[in-house]
Image 1: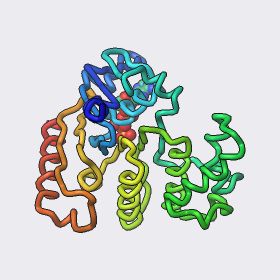
Image 2 (image 1 turned 90 degrees about the vertical axis):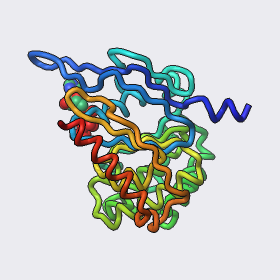
Image 3 (image 1 turned 120 degrees about the horizontal axis):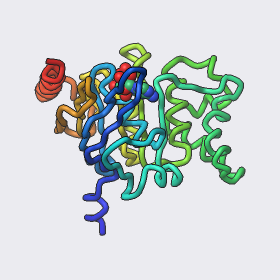
Image 4 (image 1 turned 180 degrees about the vertical axis):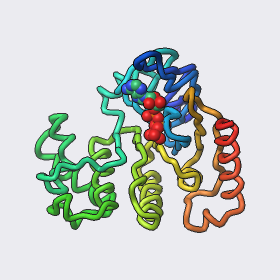
Length: 262
Ligand SMILES: Nc1ncnc2c1ncn2[C@@H]1O[C@H](COP(=O)(O)OP(=O)(O)OP(=O)(O)O)[C@@H](O)[C@H]1O
């Protein structure tokens, strides 16, 4: 039984396409993508602007419907997965409600989902502890740094215990040091929770550092150019960045990006 659980993909993408009609034509945002994501993997999607990274994430989250191919999540439709609260979504901007304090923001999805009132505070506090913000539950978003705000939005995304965390360039707007710290925190959180993470980034080093596999995408049409297994030891640490293989993986990804560009 355990074996079945570990060999069945949590996300299965087969010949998936997304074509948007645009004035005077169409945009092929994603063409014939194939990808199998196993439970508890950390997958990064990397590629130039317009290669379909966000489109792929939005398809998985059932925010848009594919124009071709097949996509299953936990063996069912993306809609069923959404209804089963399989997804937590983290955007580039933290998108917190300014008039709610930190606890109120993290509790929001639990209120929207109509979860029992008694459990909401406890659950929100638990998530704040997980992201190291338990002392800030009464603060308002404007009182927090950008990195702290993004941690609140991660806690919010985790509040109803989704199996899959979809993250669309969550650290793109942060300075390098804050970003590296949050990378380490995210990995700790990933190890502790066993979530499957699908993470969009423009940074090759961020993708190598975080991921078990990196999906390299190219634009016009948006497609998957290749997938690179990142076989660096776990848990990753600052030392991982000094590992000679780190540079080899980065070079491999850069070459795939160049190939797609050419
Ligand atoms: N709703 C839409 N209607 C029309 N075109 C769209 C729509 N959504 C995305 N596109 C187009 O599809 C292509 C892929 O977009 P997508 O946002 O997935 O790219 P991306 O790789 O996430 O880019 P970025 O790195 O800039 O966020 C782009 O050419 C984009 O303009």
